[in-house]
Length: 389
Ligand SMILES: C[S@@+](CC[C@H](N)C(=O)[O-])C[C@H]1O[C@@H](n2cnc3c(N)ncnc32)[C@H](O)[C@@H]1O
Image 1: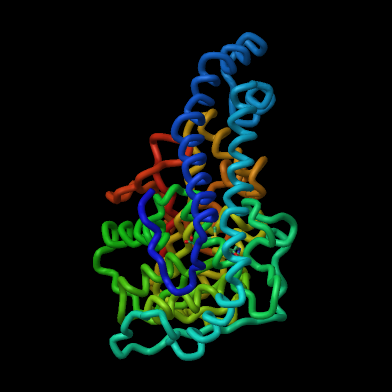
Image 2: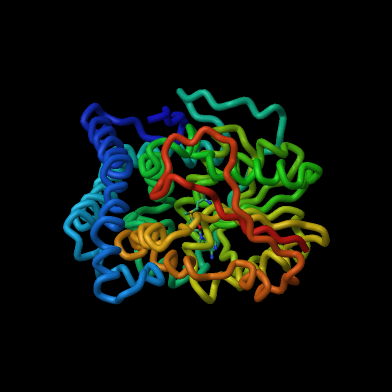
């Protein structure tokens, strides 16, 4: 697994804790690399023929094969192991976080207050302004976050387990590194790098001065944009206070100035026309049917004339079995809205948000980046919703 870059806001790991994380990483690599492809073989050799024998035709969609697939013993075995690996993943990152939480809380406060901490070398700021953090304790957390812990992370992105908590951010940072077997890069930068590569390839002349990252969580993708456009003022918003406290301390520790604020992307307090680029990375599938067009409408309100929004999303597969496998996350990993995204027309959603059809493009993109591990399909491509104001 590629090395995860240590920074001041990550806990140290004891030998046993590291061994556990290594085990989870190896187990997940084995499951996705060696066992999961077997589900495709099982589909082609047993499930599809059984479906044809019963119905006299091929399955029409992923929902039709659900009953058949979920009764298959190989699929059941892989699915149970995959679910358990996700639980183990959180357990393995929560233990060191809990053990070192008092120090992490202290460090986050010191970094946020001064940009310096004793004993840790922070990157030089090159005289740039520092970032900021604005929290809103009165913000109502949307039901789609309160109803279930998305991808089983205990407490989700928004729960404070203690005063000024940062643990959701600490756990998420290392958790997604393990989840993707290190494929997100040393700073979990893959999604930001991918969308940036898209902008540079398709719109090389754009040099945004005011950038908003919607659903920024720990700011892993936001940092990519702030580094790519050092003259720009970069904002990151999220509903979760603990991920934002962590994002702020992490960005400051990395020497990158970002203005984070706790806001619901469905309705923000920014003035109309505040941004010339709005981005999001794997956020839309964690919202809801009603929130999705509202978020896109809010993006339109926030874009200056000529401004552009780019939303990076996880593809939902092309074939019946690929779509079924993607939707595993909804049924087994609390990605409750993700399966509806399989049938949602993103262009139509952007039009509900007020964009004229001619200004919207739903694109597919395979970046020329070194991606070590792909999930669920060999033919991986990112989905991008692009629209211009
Ligand atoms: C999968 S994480 C994405 C993390 C990050 N964008 C990245 O590049 O890795 C989804 C994030 O979107 C946030 N989110 C979801 N709905 C939101 C909303 N309505 N307003 C603001 N943030 C939201 C969640 O709190 C969570 O932190």
